[in-house]
Length: 282
Ligand SMILES: Cc1cc2nc3c(=O)[nH]c(=O)nc-3n(C[C@H](O)[C@H](O)[C@H](O)COP(=O)(O)OP(=O)(O)OC[C@H]3O[C@@H](n4cnc5c(N)ncnc54)[C@H](O)[C@@H]3O)c2cc1C
Image 1: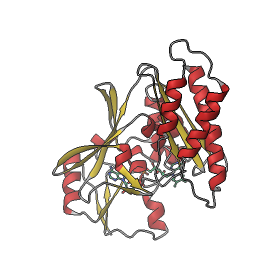
Image 2: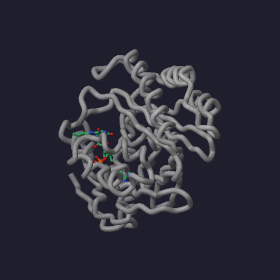
Image 3: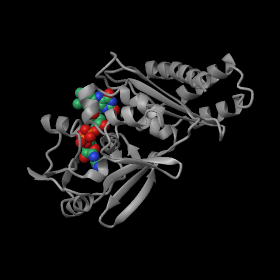
Image 4: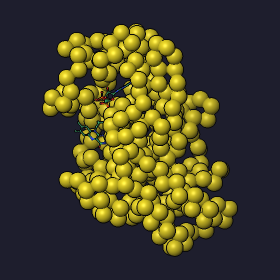
């Protein structure tokens, strides 16, 4: 197997164009599992860890551009105050070793419906920046992932970064159900972001449909029902209906981790709890 290790972004894009069959690798926490189980046998690996541009983040235009090579450990340490939902989700990923190694770009690249970084990114309408030697393009995250472990990345493209809108007053929450507390793939998960200024609600359910999925009807319903001006406590009936609408938005399957019925039930509970936590905190 060839091993390509470009020293900078331009060289990485050129290597990608010259070797479209090379598999990009950053932390390797998904790629190495695939190789070890012989599920993939790429002609070459394109190691991006020496590309300094990928490991940077910066604030710009009311948002934050997070390079694809930023790890979960750094999101928790450096971005927890700016994007609390993403940091909460990052804390639930794997173990300290996986959080030190695994990246947001790798979670996007794998495009698993169970990827924990994805629901908080959907809930705030993040945009994925893709690049190739031909140029750059930006794709809304819900158009980037098109099926289980499938995305629109072209053979000569790399994920450069993800753009996350920053709302100083946004109240965000993330909840995940697993078969144990750590080192576990989500049975299902739920992210919510309340935007006080725009008076909108963003949500996303994970591991409960072929892709992470926003519960649009639930978002619209609750945004109308919340007492944004008076900040009164949320009515029980509203919480109830919100939970039901979130569960209805799911298209879960029965598998070894949980039944479809259990996933819908858990989503209903997580939706009600996280909405209440976010509203009370705000
Ligand atoms: C023990 C263990 C526990 C785990 N627990 C969790 C968990 O709790 N939650 C969770 O969501 N995930 C978990 N994972 C999966 C994994 O850690 C995450 O998906 C992580 O984000 C992958 O990042 P990485 O940098 O290691 O990606 P890699 O393995 O290097 O790459 C993953 C995919 O992304 C592609 N890729 C990477 N970077 C780029 C780029 N810049 N451009 C284009 N394509 C790219 C690769 O080609 C590959 O297809 C776990 C894995 C292990 C081994």
